[in-house]
Length: 331
Ligand SMILES: CC(C)=CCC/C(C)=C/CC/C(C)=C/COP(=O)(O)OP(=O)(O)O
View 1 (tube, rainbow, N blue to C red):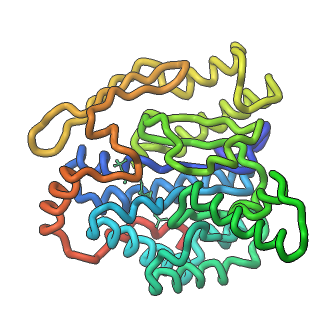
View 2: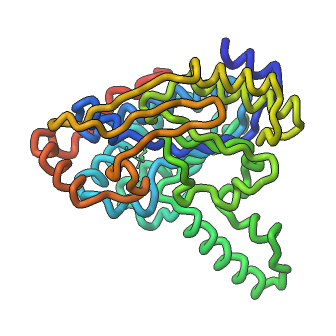
């Protein structure tokens, strides 16, 4: 139903998502970190379903940054196990790929992946390669700087071989996203105003809107996605630009709708000591989250305090067993 409403107006063709906040969500709900990531996968599935229903033809998700290899070995293993479990399910059951004709592509520096993970991901790409209605780019493991370095290396090699001219257009052809339409919308959750080395080249496209959402990724719902798409559509319709420079009453109304009443207060308690770590006030003109120093860590970083506290909780988990039950949609 949401999808049909969105499809009746302008729809972004390519949406990128920084799915941030799984660990904070897990901590604030006294869960294991890996459960937070598992819930994050479920949120990703629900969000993608709405995007494809709405007519989006390309979605690019930041599933693992190259910098994430600096996290604790436990967490890296959980994320790898999660990927293996989920993509194995996709290979067996098809997930949304058959329903929506989605081709899955894995973007990033694939040689950094363990061979068993790489094998499953390659199988997913192989199984879905004939789907042509839409694409899902899973960035795993990825950073923009690495993508650009790779593109420069390849374009220089090609120029040496064939004499092609190196300019922005030719360089762009060597980005991982070369086959996808220009990026129209970039979303980041968790109230953090950074791009964390994600789609830095692509988000400079003149029509690309960047939206920061003051919710942790597992809290993000299809309704939130719907409101963002409506706002994007209003901006596109009224200004001819989705980035919405200037203020239009209709767009403001849509943004207000998006913020669920504008003054929602949220408090998140941290783990055992009950210390207040975050309070947010959602504003009509943007999103802000008052953050503790702990929250201010880069998406890709992990502090020694995190490693210690996560290692404490890990001992109570079944090591290597991802909480992978969540992703059984479409079966
Ligand atoms: C295999 C696959 C496609 C997985 C999708 C699951 C998913 C949403 C992964 C995102 C992982 C990640 C490193 C998020 C970033 O911050 P953070 O959420 O770790 O934590 P923060 O609260 O510390 O910002």
